Length: 76
Image (cartoon, rainbow, N blue to C red; front, side):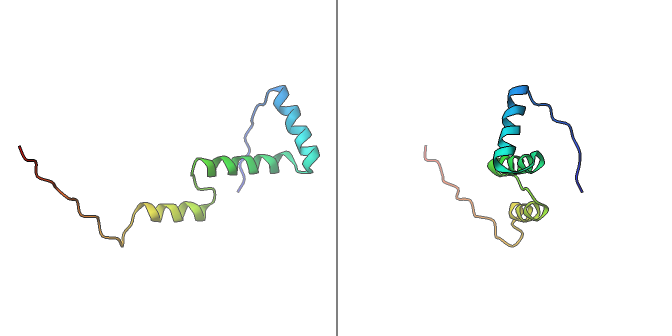
């Protein structure tokens, strides 16, 4: 399912994006998808549902034993 949103660019950025699209032969939507995927990966966020589910399993290690904490006695 795709969601439509409006994004506003200043004139300089818009013209640079248009030239990049012409040079690469990609559409603006394809370029935006690539840029946002890269941003999410840079910030270590899941991009797909599968990645999100995989990360959520790592956050809750159900089959692992908790690490024992070592208490040290203070000598005073």
